Length: 80
Image 1 (cartoon, rainbow, N blue to C red):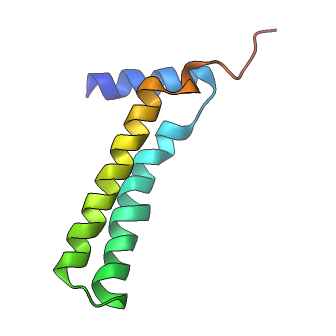
Image 2 (image 1 turned 135 degrees about the vertical axis):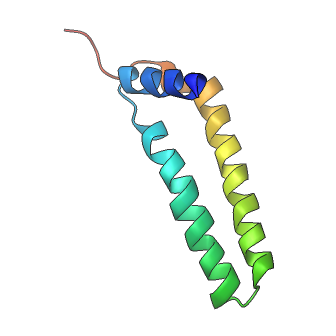
């Protein structure tokens, strides 16, 4: 919890807003929407829900790696 909050503050202070929406996108944009599409539209049932969960977890890991090692730490807001 503390580590996530500290990362969120670092992202906010550098001018990037990626982390704020990435967690919501991972949960609502991928897991729920993709789970619904796979389970009902493609008639995969519970397998579709599990696949959507796996895909959203992979996206979350990629986002976490980008936050940890990516170029986001470079400030985009310059001091006057």
